[in-house]
Length: 218
Figure 1 (cartoon, rainbow, N blue to C red):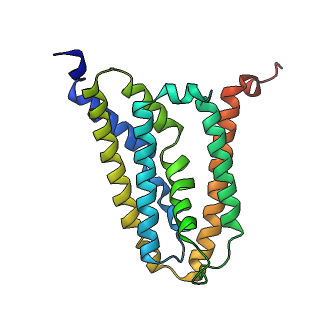
Figure 2: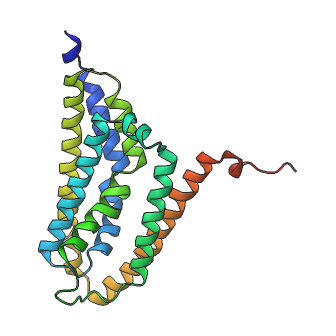
Figure 3: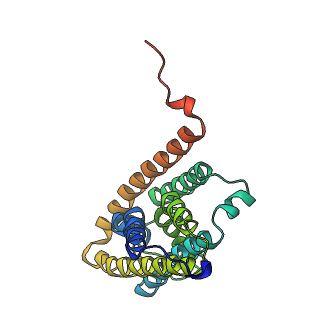
């Protein structure tokens, strides 16, 4: 087989699919997703779900073909990416905890606002986070053939489709919750997101500055 059409064993691509789904794990962010789409119309929820899935797709495809070169171009490390993602999450959490009631004025949210939710924090870094990005880079650079890159791309497309389906199905859940329950739920999710954000930041700082994790001798 010529180098341009070289592929790995099929089970390696299955492993990549399972690995990315485990890292992205759309089921774990469903409560957060419900908090972010609280009180929105069905069309807006569908739009946010689509934007989040497309963000995952574009992000992972970009790193499939550009990979380490993209990070190296801007001198970005995975640790720095994790810290930046944590800060973005923290800002989102603070916004959720001080958000208004679920009832929104008709013209309060623009199309840009709705789209931005799907991009940050849902698409990045909750779904396409540092772990998924690193996994994609490592697997995509295992071989340098075009066929291998296409195979990895197909895995990424499948992952994005699964993310979209999971978010679309979960968007119907808030119909069974009262506005008061959703408001309380939103505040609780804000606290949880803040905790996740702090963990992102601390993990990134610990990797950048190992001395922070060293314990003083007794």
